[in-house]
Image 1 (cartoon, helix red, strand yellow):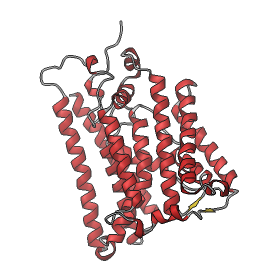
Image 2 (tube, helix red, strand yellow):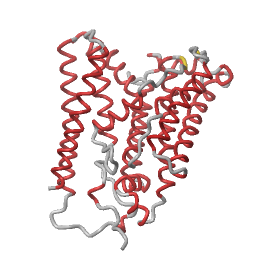
Image 3 (cartoon, rainbow, N blue to C red):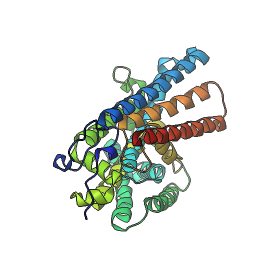
Image 4 (tube, helix red, strand yellow):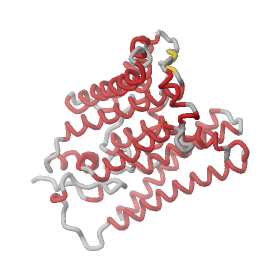
Length: 350
């Protein structure tokens, strides 16, 4: 007996759907969709409330420094790089996968794009190389997982080690300084558009595109269906292996874009770039309501998670608090978010 197609209860907070509208089962009286939408609205509002509270704390503790326009621009700029990585990570986790190699892929793409040979091709050469290296690493992950049958945790862990090692080999442990003015100028205040840094605009563009893809395309609906129930998605006609390959390619693409943004921000390429990005991206996605088991997630929530973590780091830095205290606070927030998720899911089952 065949299994039914994924039901609406597996859909993500961003209104994910089935692979095809015709596959949807008849609606039940008093269905769960309104209740789910209410829970999602409450979650997003809660995240906005936490962010507002953090801004209030920052404004009270360091009013002159925190509320300064330059500092707010800095927060958004710092959130942009990890934010782009988090968008790709959100798609992967919604599908039921994980990518532990995002930080290493950012490092590899950044150092490969800043070699002397690459810089000879100027702005286009650096940007193109960063994106292509990210895509290539994502392709390797996707092939190993989708067609090689490897567990995502193992495959991406192997990529983490390999990419870090290759990045170290390329740089020989040295920092590669960028000398292309057109790249460096993107990080200067003169390039700001209406007071908004170009990197923030890039992050906003990636976020909007990611939201549209997840919520308004067949690709997004298939991603949610695969994460909700891969076997049912296969029976519904979805090529699950190809979908997973595309998702890790998407993660690699986001890492390539983030690597270019980091090059602009730091003005160099280093093998230590992207350190612990995988943990920050996973944490931001979880805070935003994405389930590690797959089948549910939201781009908006993930972005808010990034902003919350970045704001916390900024407040702690302004108040001269140690980095270990920052990590403890982040860990406590992650635990709280997971407990809230479990409570929400139990409420939905009753």
